[in-house]
Structures are given as structure tokens and as C-alpha cells.
Image 1 (cartoon, rainbow, N blue to C red):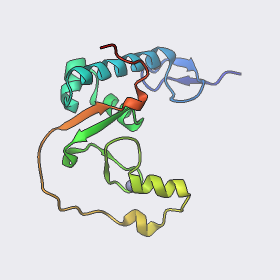
Image 2 (cartoon, rainbow, N blue to C red; image 1 turned 90 degrees about the vertical axis):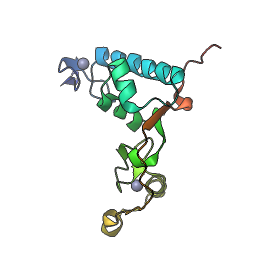
Image 3 (tube, rainbow, N blue to C red; image 1 turned 120 degrees about the horizontal axis):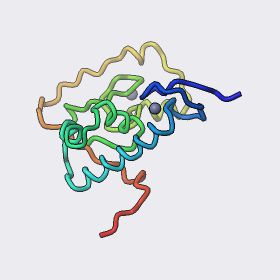
Image 4 (tube, helix red, strand yellow; image 1 turned 60 degrees about the horizontal axis):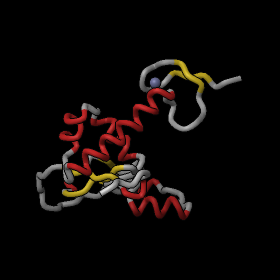
Length: 146
Ligand SMILES: [Zn+2]
Ligand SMILES: [Zn+2]
């Protein structure tokens, strides 16, 4: 019996085959959008999140999703990072966890309550520059011709 679900994106019913709960059409669209983001960042290195979003008509949430997947990363000023480590809340540039947490999770250490509540109160210079994005080259499937 097929695993039928509602697509998280468009709400249509589809046969779930694993991964994200989105239908084939939305998955295709997502891939196409990602390629557009990648192209845009190639043409406009250092474009900000909102620039990419408005230029390509792709939601900020969607771009964040690519960041979470580790396909894009934020470069530039750290104060404006929009991703947080899912474990400790520290600002990160790509993926789901900061380096420390990723290491700990790899080691299979149990997260203690004390560690979880330890908040980093960073008193770095408050700079207000834009969030920059770049695509992560290891995910660059097709090579660009010069
Ligand atoms: Zn869909
Ligand atoms: Zn962390």
C-alpha cells in the first residue's frame, strides 16, 4: 500500500517515497529554483538574502531551506546570520549545527541540560552589513563552462 501524504508545499496528495514530504512537481520546482539561486550568486557574488529573494521571486524561507540543507552558505558579516544551530542556538553559516555541536553529535555524546542552557553572550562589534550568500561548491553538480 503506497504511503500517501499531502505535499508540504502545495497540499496536493502524492505517493511519499522518502526524503522531504513534498510532491514530485514541487521537488522539481525546488531543484529548478536552487539552480536559479546558484546562477544568480554566480553572476552576483555577495548578493544578499533579500536581493536573491526579490530578484528571483523565491521566498526567504525557501532560501533558508537550502541553507539548512547545506547547499548554500552565508558568507560575510556574522552578526546578521539568519541560521542558528539547532542544538545550542549559535549563529551558523550552513547546515543544522555549529562545528562544536556537530563534533559532539558525531562523538555520540549525550547533550546535558547544562550544555543546552549555556548561552553564548557574544559581545562582538555590532556591524550591520548584509548577509551574503554563496553556493556550496561541493554541491555544484554541473560544472559551468567558461
Ligand atoms: Zn507539491
Ligand atoms: Zn551548536
